[in-house]
Image (tube, rainbow, N blue to C red; front, side, top):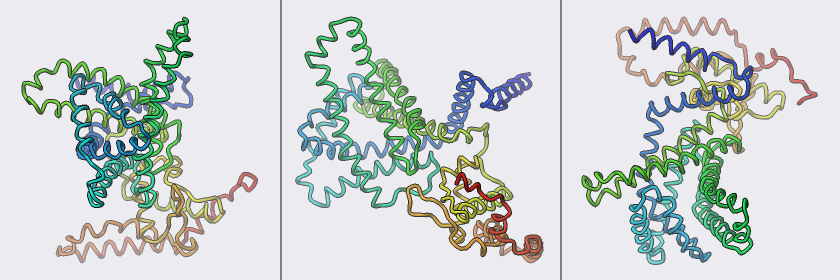
Length: 451
């Protein structure tokens, strides 16, 4: 009885949300439909388990790296004379743990105080820095997974960027909080607070300040961490949602902790660690969800009613390979600048993992190369006049042949090989040594007045 009703509701949902053209909708409905589409895809991402798995991995890495990270930050803050601010900053981050947050903050600070950087020696200091860098590297890996970036930063840039965040980041955060507290304590501000309605506005702004700081921090993370260019508007969208979720979620989690006396009864002394791990997991999950929202905001064409993995068929890969070579060859031939992964994703609206898979095939077989720019662009690795369509299709069709080496021992191999040879010969005869340059020249020339 329920099946027809469910099917009817699903048809209405698909027609209302996915069967409409966003450009033809009024702004309120367009925003609502886009929000539902994002929520739909986020639900699928969570159901597939990739984000939750990454969040759990980051919890483990955070537990290992937290004390070394705070020790390095403490040493840096001590050089500027503001190291006393690290405890209230840490307490604010652990405020959702309630009274246990105070206890956990004190324990962490004790651990940090016991880390004597001066007596660690060169090897101990190197291990300390490596543990901290590994946390940032793990975070970058999670963000690159969300953005479907297969290549991490180059080693030199990775080291300089990571150390900038680790060493300079805490100083900037503490300085911003210190400046805010100093301004709020000045006689001028205190005098203004006594005047209404300025006082009400200042009190409202003070309540809003934690949201602003968290949203700003998340926005910075979404711009800086992924190894690709993230638009500010997309990072800001993800940052606003993630920052609001994190700050608001802290209140709900604090209520949960206050009513979770059973955890203390079950886990005894380990209860504080269990609750801390749960909060870490939820925090990282919110961070990753915000990154996913930023990704979909930057690539709205990838919002689709998908139920599978988005993998292309064999013919789809072949079509994409030819399309990519035509686009790369066209821009190179007419000196229009190289395509980047981000530009190709927006232009073709194909799953990024499929796009990068085909780009990898073309690169491994010497059809295209990457520039040294950031982000890298793609250009032909050799003259497009020498790249035939037959070579291109052969490389694409036989990219995974090594996976099926076990089939070679079968007695039917000879008959199968004969069939495939006839297919290859027919394809070769049909293409007649046509090259990528032939396809490029068959397209309209670019408008030189706009180029």
